[in-house]
Length: 312
Ligand code: ADP
Ligand code: MG
Image 1 (cartoon, rainbow, N blue to C red):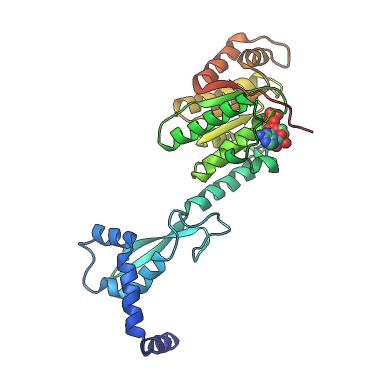
Image 2: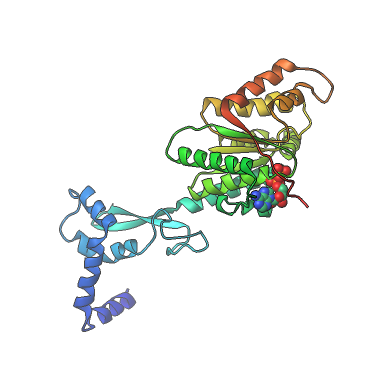
């Protein structure tokens, strides 16, 4: 305590103290966020409260809110990286409360999901995919069309409507996963959580989760994520369990809750229907396959991605 009063005394005894104090106060009172707070709480803010809270208010105005001034979490300029300040009234002063910022929220959610679902793994080049970096050959009208529809989706989603996702099909190596990655990254830059799940691995993983009872938890995460991307649907081996209990359940839930889904596949819709109708054991179940297809058609717009194989 003595320490503190000593340094305060030192500060207040400096010859330019008054000038600096007034300047600081002016900065604080000119800040639009502070003005809004004062207006909103005008009945609670009593005489002297602002003067008593000046250092807190100064701390507040110099930090980024809603990640506006931070390009990334690593470059967060706030006192406590990943946390942004909010003003509150605490007894006789205005104080600061720190909450997780949107970028940290998103990263924590992603980490939690990654720890839970191993098949959420995304290759590094795809992790960095971005619309404006997607390389497009001049004659690739299909790729341009897909990118433009994907951008329309992000725009519509951000403005609060419920656009349909995309059923993106085309041959091996044309860049379907890459485009899904770009959509995921674009959504992330707007603080929208999404999950890109590699279906064949996901099905294997779920099968293995029977024993350790994490099945429901994994399924739940995938059902409820704001935007889901199922990568390479059709490359998995079909069992009635995978089709009806996993895929069917996910689609049903998301359809009812109006949660968008993106799907990539080497198959067009007709081929996928055929693939889903014959189980590993050779049983033909066309009605069950048709039910899945109905949901997919309801929730996505089919687009074919045509282009050269970009692998190797
Ligand atoms: P698919 O999912 O259709 O089989 P991928 O998305 O995995 O194809 O793409 C195959 C390879 O080509 C990947 O290594 C990916 O990074 C790369 N790639 C795909 N699209 C592009 C693109 N537009 N620009 C540059 N590289 C791309
Ligand atoms: Mg792929």
